[in-house]
Amino acid sequence: MRIDAINRIYDAYKAQSTTASKKLDKTSKKDEVEFSSRAKDFTNMTKLLSDVPDVRTDKVEEIKNRMSSGNYNVKAEEVAEKILSQFDVRG
Image (cartoon, rainbow, N blue to C red; front, side, top):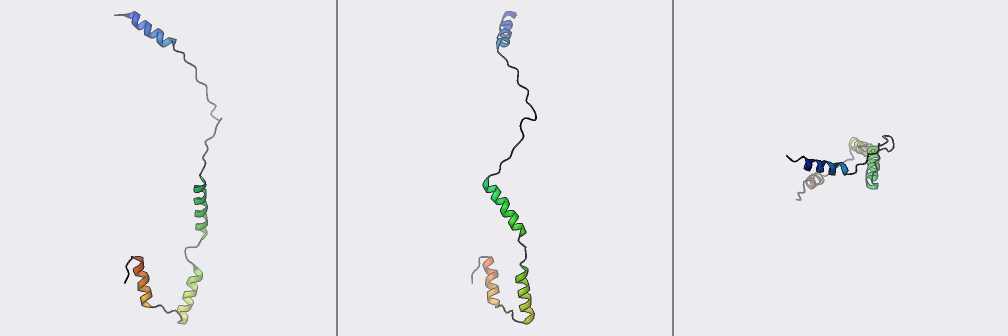
């Protein structure tokens, strides 16, 4: 067994310069997040839309009043056309 070869390998390994790593200060830096302007716009629009009511009560009240007074007449053809347009079917 050749011990001198092992010694040379060990000496070569030992000769490599190693530097001690610096200890990092754990409080030196905080994590940061930066959102794009598009993301900010999206957030603003979402907030604005959440303020819009789901039901337009003014329209509902107007139609209720017209129905109760007998002035709300809708043609069946118009209703059918609207329904079929939702399914992309034209008559």
